[in-house]
View (cartoon, rainbow, N blue to C red):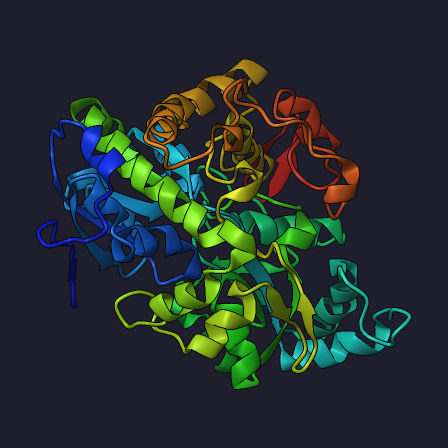
Length: 455
């Protein structure tokens, strides 16, 4: 694996304000991990644009084989931090799977995922889909149109298999959300059965992101939920059709985070602030001037050291468009958001949503009071570190104070019904009421026992 070594010496990117306010770093040689997805962009940009350099950080970026290897690397110290699934720090902290206290002082992006179905499934669904005034397929597409396809598979004795990237991934929860909103049960977890397929009508299993298109082409799965560029890759290869983006499932939903151990943050507070400063600047660069830098970002991400996909494939979503059926390219300017809408601020309410989905599907096997959700969110998401870093950037003249939510209590305003595909609003301050409002999923007092929901 080729590593990327960022050298401070000889840099021309160091600014006078940054020099004047250089933090006294506890550790300046760092290794960060990532998975080959376009939403790792803040790390790549912070490296390539010299933002790590400006903070006196010598950084190596290393691609990881899968999400488990990445998480294990952060826990055992092989990696100092990483591009992570938002569910990973939460799951680790509450002891679901690997147990370790992981925190996040920085949210990496909003949106960025899609759900792709095989050509076979698409052709079975397509005749029944509504069309808009221009004769194009109307979006968003409800999973209710997938129900007859699953019934047809079952009648032929075939399970309907779909891929997602990890049990506590956004992709798992978004795919489940879409299916359930269309009346399809994606199955439950229990302490004894962690497949997530208990009572399932569609069977979800783990496939690493870069392997999604090949697994779909091989017929092992009939669809998947993944980040870019692996939905657009299916379009370019002619093997599948993306049917919905996560922006259409939940407008401006949180995606990846930057994760470090709580121990690292405690031992290296200035280094942690310096890293967050660099990442905030990278996110700003990615979104500034109406995404004017996205073409350059595409070129960076297409390199083998980062995502390694063709620039045309990455650009299909990264530059504000998204292609569904081949030739049906539509404007989706917020498909990838890195800074606007306070995308980088680690909101407690984002953490609470992930925890509600873990409870909904049985990964959290017993009901918890609302206070528990708040406590876990506060133990993992660290807006105070983020705001310290942001204030330094403002003081250095590198950021605008108006771009940061200084007075936030850590909770976003409730997401309105019209911004979510099932029309059910989400308020992070009332997680149990939200869970109980969802038609498919565990409710208060319910548990999964054997192959059935009880309570």
